[in-house]
Length: 139
Image (cartoon, rainbow, N blue to C red; front, side):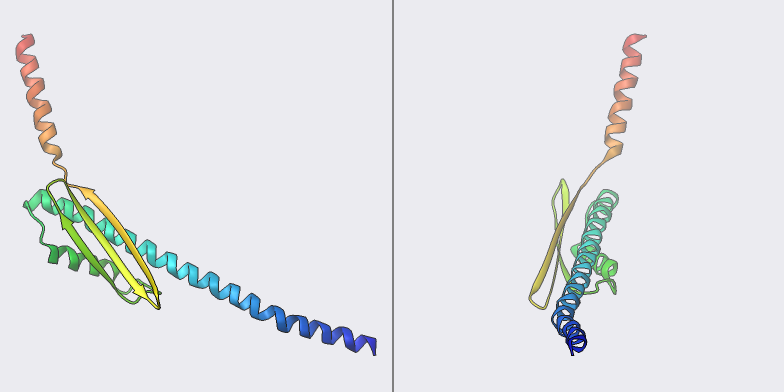
């Protein structure tokens, strides 16, 4: 009789333990999906900021619609947990900022990335002019 009691004890213990194990496993998968989407959103926002900075440098201006389309193309079909995301892009003389937002099932995710608008050839030209001037003064 004692032998049967021990076998039933294991079944009862597993009946309490398995829901906890399954809940922890599902929580781990949920957290992985969340951070996957956060990394995708963050990468897309940064890439949009850098490409926008280059476009401002080359073309002199950046249309927000073009940057928004670029951001949406970067995240299209890649988000696992959040269905869709939106972006807000602000441009000033020195930098471009991209804010990406997504929400689903009561959770929200927001990232903000920025990139400076640089003009490296101005520094190079100034440096060459100074070096040329220095050579003339020395000779």
